Length: 130
Image 1 (cartoon, helix red, strand yellow):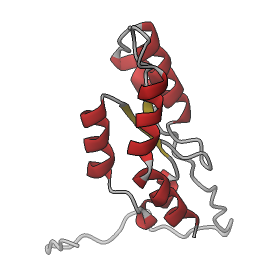
Image 2 (cartoon, one colour):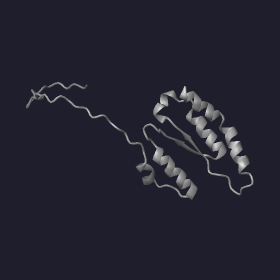
Image 3 (tube, helix red, strand yellow):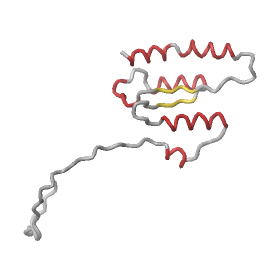
Image 4 (cartoon, helix red, strand yellow):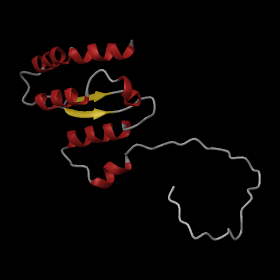
């Protein structure tokens, strides 16, 4: 399956990063590297656990991101955070919050039948908790 493919890609990250370091070993600075986990809309099918992803990022000084290309969740925030890292600036709370996930809801069409209401319901001396 596709998710198993992504797990195999994750398992090869260390080899890939060693190649990046080797290519840049004579450079004064190493490139900024970001690890982006995709398909967060399929959380129930996750093959690479969040803690494994984040541990790898911490050990290798990567920035860590989770996105969904399908729904667009956190994609803009990912690019915004990477650009801020490259420029050496810190995003403020308002900038981070404006890029948070947008929750889409379906519009429900209720029937247009009139609802009968009791204007003055009869009073009762009993109280019920539902």
